[in-house]
Amino acid sequence: MPYARPLHGLMASVLLTTAAVASEPATPGPDLTAREVVDIQLQALSDNDSPTPDAGIEQVWAFAHPDNRSVTGPLPRFKRMLKGPGYGVLINHASAEIITLDEGRGRALYRVRVRDCDGGFYRFRWRLERASLDAGEAWMTTGVTPARDTGEQML
Picture: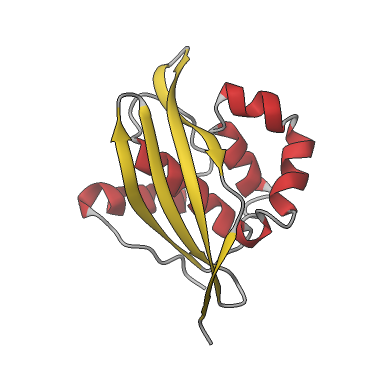
């Protein structure tokens, strides 16, 4: 099933095209906005096992803020957490919608609504902060709340 989400302008189209043909995972850098980072992570999780098993989770890990990694890592533990009850609906989800709640001063917060592969809808809060990397200041995920069932169902 194709990945569906609202597109915002040319950049969103370019991002989708790039993600579809890229053979290498995206990496954090100063050229990506906070919203693009969330989009990259959701896109990767929507097809988690492409091109290799758990490649989507590994893409999310690449954008995990160092403070987040210290709490949720190492990677094998992070994989188990994402496949667990609080986050498992993100794996191979059918679609996602990103709503901006706050952007500014080195922090960003988004509400993400995901439709899982069974048609149920779940809500998350995705928090990001700027991190200093060798490549420059980059947006990275500091936290994602566990899934909250919205009670909606698409049949």
